[in-house]
Image 1 (cartoon, rainbow, N blue to C red):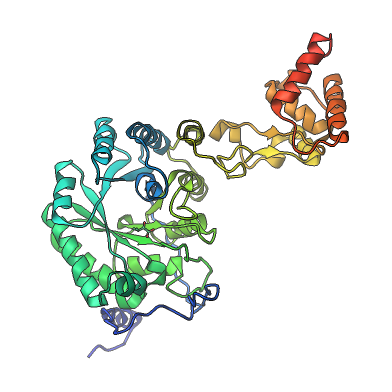
Image 2 (cartoon, helix red, strand yellow; image 1 turned 60 degrees about the vertical axis):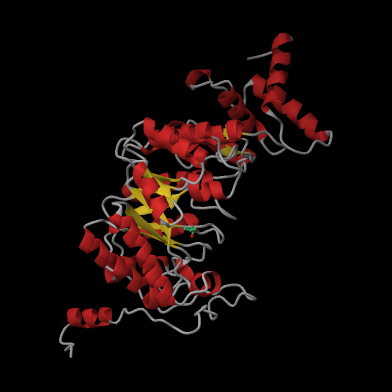
Length: 457
Ligand SMILES: CC(C)C(=O)C(=O)O
């Protein structure tokens, strides 16, 4: 009989109760997920402490979850992108790992070619079908870690796998033991954690993993997968949707160390970035991302966004080189043929382009007024103004200065003769019924025309 004579004992007693709850019928959380209604956020007003680990990092799944959602990359494309991830992550390995399929000959060739580059970071890890042969393959290819699927909601356990919780629990532990037997670090992907019974399945399972980890001395990883993007960060939100509750519970109740916890988000409710940052704040060292957020349905957490989340939370880039983000976006557009929406933060064609004349006026007076940070320095993307009916003299002056790279005393202002001539040209275009912006080429051609007719510049 445990005596509750202080808070520690009380907490321990509560923790003793985290036993697998082998229910007869699935718990589908119908109060939260009625399916024929919009999912609901429920609150139990429980707050958990913020405790961001000192070492936080990004892991990449562009070649696994990312690739699942699009035409496969060629081997050359994967090697080029991997090399860019290496440069982006910098010498401290802030892009810590990247995971690869090993299914086909082509998948394995990509791994061998990336291994040949001999980079410490991102460490190449695997994603496999969980069977003995595949574990052996991971081992033979010289990889240390592999992801394995341990789906944890009753949607998956009962409805997809047609198992009971106890059967799934034992089955998964058996797979984890097989990995340990061949000396591979298992990374357990807790699929659909935001619809899972947290105290009735997730915590007991994570506690079993912790025991295996202690026994074997192998740091078994736990990846919390918000497969459908249901996670929320509202203070006091209840499980299973609370991101902070999940991370705190894995860390505190199941005693999984922060460096072994990762968050894997999806963007179905526009929350992937915020949920990932919260996972860091509440104790996960890793956030799992894809380049440009490419992934199933609405995508995964965009890796480039987490570079800037990192810099904001830590106050430093810790050696990451964000200018590589612009190279990655350009490579996707020009070599892979992927169209990035023009208003996508950090990478879209127009992410730092201003159109309104009044904003352009501000930009011309001082760039900081309408630019999020020195985008030229951090992304090789100087601010731009695109010329529309509303750009005004200031907008045109900014366009001239950025297009012709005129700095300081060379720069023109809104009273210059060239700017006034261009403004008349632009006004005429829109008076004649034009819709849509003026392209750089049209404006530059008109400047050429003025020059060749003895005009200004
Ligand atoms: C398949 C699993 C591991 C996943 O990627 C997810 O849950 O999003």
